[in-house]
Amino acid sequence: MPALIEEGRAKVNLTLKVVGRRVDGLHDLESVVAFADCADRLILEPGEVLALSMSGPLADACGDTSDNLVLKAARLLGERVADLKVGHFTLEKVLPVAAGIGGGSADAAAALRLLARLNELSLDDDRIMEVALKTGADVPVCVASRACDMSGVGESLLPLDLPTLPCVLVNPRVPVATRDVFNALGLRHGELLIGATDVVMQAPSWPDTSSAIDDWIDALASGTNDLETPAARVEPVISDVLSALRQATGVRLVRMSGSGATCFAIFATDADARAAGEKLRADQPGWWVHAGTLS
Image (tube, rainbow, N blue to C red):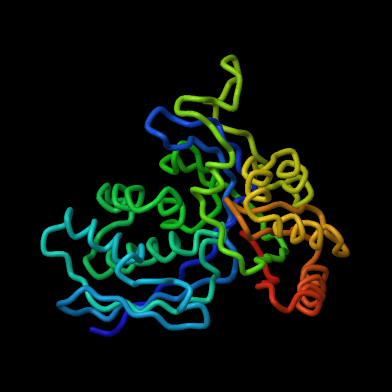
């Protein structure tokens, strides 16, 4: 059987509200998630043995392959699907790691899509979604790899009709551990960041299919990323990245994604995004910069 191929697109949190910390220690979030046109590439060659090898410019940053989320997802699915067909995965790594853009989660989601194809499973199969959530909070949204309003601990997904948004993604090549950022946020078990009388269970209202890009940018600008301030305390270079993006010509919105350190800027036009990307690469040759689109 020929090799199967999937892409693990970078996930970008356009907004991220921390609702609170549950008694089990997990954090309830509400986030508008989009996906960029840059991605890792995952190849599956069907075979008897489950294995993973790494390639690509950022392969060395991934650490021990035995801890990789691709293998974790595959093993968890094998515990739930009898006689699961597997094989050898090759991950071409181009996205920065520990970067707030769900690189590992996107790779795990790509692995689940590949295994679903190989084993003729639907992506709506309860076992796929159970494994996705058990692998990581960002994996369920990455399985579909389309714009969503994500809430809870990643289990509740509301698809959104997000237009294509010109953007620039920047990572200063400094890994940021999600745990460190949440520790800096400092919520106690059972503590909420919203008032007891706030209405948090209603589905958020976002622009519809017919809305202009300006309507979306205005709506997103009314949000925030609650992890931006604590992340900047953990890695102050995040503030430098945000400042550099805010100085770009034509920029409409600047924010950090996830728990950092990747930050994004949304622009009015593709030309503005490309020009900003070129300038940032020239000014900061040590940074990872991608100029493209979100959707």
